[in-house]
Image (tube, helix red, strand yellow):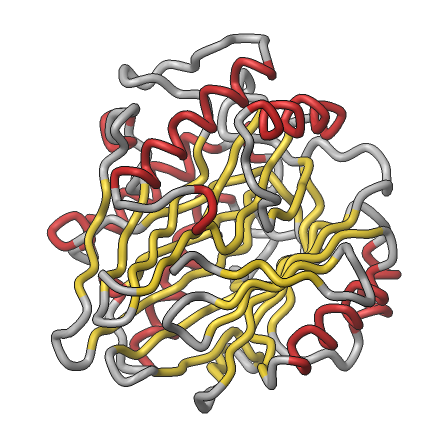
Length: 363
């Protein structure tokens, strides 16, 4: 059964999607007032008797105002300002909430960094807004430090780093150092046995954070408890492996259990099978190619756009949003539960990137 997209009657800018077969909810809201967005997310979670785990906030405005607006809110908050942002016109928020199961807070370095929960088939750990200890250290040092922090936080909760299925890396001034970041990530993965088990799906986007650190990271780890869940990396029918050009992530990861299947698709852009950028200088063409790649990934696992539970569309320039909307209309796509963000993408010639999750009841 496809996921049900439920819109709040009181605020048409709020979309809440309950993941089929699970107690998780994805909440997406857009607007200009951070405080209003927090209230809307809180109301949507409360209406479903759910507790907010984490919020991604794509806020192009003032950090001090943001901190004032979010004081006293629950869950972990990841504030992001895209590298390419030049004004404060756009704000979007995406939250994850859980209902029907206890949440165990994860603390590391004296602060809350996530939650652990379980559903009878697996234990889940979601870490959010994890930062390096010294934001003034060289970027490669900060990257190693934050990866070690993630590994330590997972280990303290009974997870191994190889249980990681999804990561989000938000790199400040990404285009200045993305290759160096990849070098550190690859070495860390090699040292922790990731390539021998399963490389996580991932997003790497250029966005700053209030701490002024080189990067902040979110992570989802899943540790099956009874053998009923299968987790595997999924290749892209229209792209080669990112490992071929020294970027250590899988195109997607699928989780299949007795009640549902769940697919998390990495940040996807207009990259061809040979690893080269396609449709150079043509944002409309890049959007179309990206949608083709994402659709092929969905269909390779028996899913389609109607099964999408949440996503984020990243634009190097949000002025290209009409081209995306036009492409969606031309394909007859349903109203997708997407947050919109302006941010630098991992190559200077890439103009658009899309990440989505999808789920369906039954195997």
